[in-house]
Image (cartoon, rainbow, N blue to C red; front, side, top):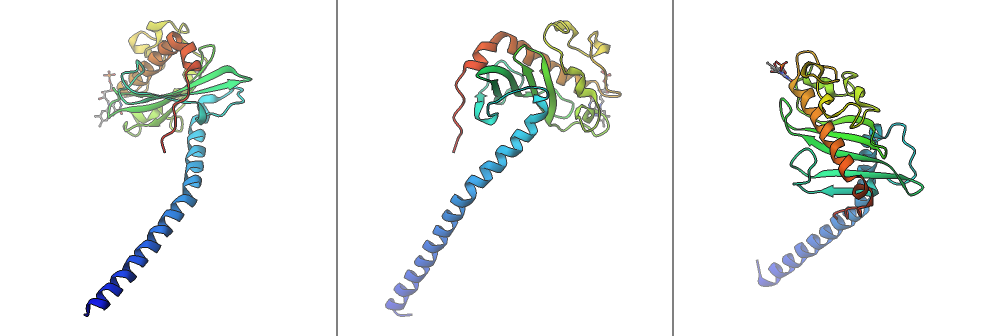
Length: 211
Ligand SMILES: Cc1cc2nc3c(=O)[nH]c(=O)nc-3n(C[C@H](O)[C@H](O)[C@H](O)COP(=O)(O)O)c2cc1C
């Protein structure tokens, strides 16, 4: 191949590469917003059960507060708090926290707390507990997780936040006590945190979203 044809081939390949790069960049720009909107919708859908019965007129995901460990909430990974408001007044806070002492691994939980301190709802976002045993913490598998609705720190008092078999007020799961113990402890510790930090939680500036 002559020097001229090598240069020509090189230039052609360079141009093709440049066109491809521009196409990828344009596609990325076009789909980025749609992906972000889908992710937001999915997130808000998964948080919705923890907001049952709450009136609010603010965005949910916009009010995200990310706390890096050590943060005093359950888990040693980042904890997330979404705050919702009604006419500018605090309505509820949603905590996404991790119970680290599950039977088979960490259990990611979303817990809604009304501004008054009572639980609006608890849902399990992620877990690896055993099907038929520990996985009954999931609302689709049993009603177990609904027993926390309306309860608060004080109802019951701290020591009552345990399984009945451990002297507390909450129902067991047949054949599995490690999993429910972990979830109850995470709820209890989140409520203790809420009571101690209520004003700061609602006043803190939202964490900037990463690009
Ligand atoms: C294969 C297998 C899977 C199990 N999965 C769970 C589970 O997901 N959650 C749980 O709490 N216990 C699970 N257990 C049972 C625990 O080992 C334990 O016996 C149970 O939690 C009862 O604890 P207790 O003796 O304190 O009541 C599992 C046991 C076996 C053998």
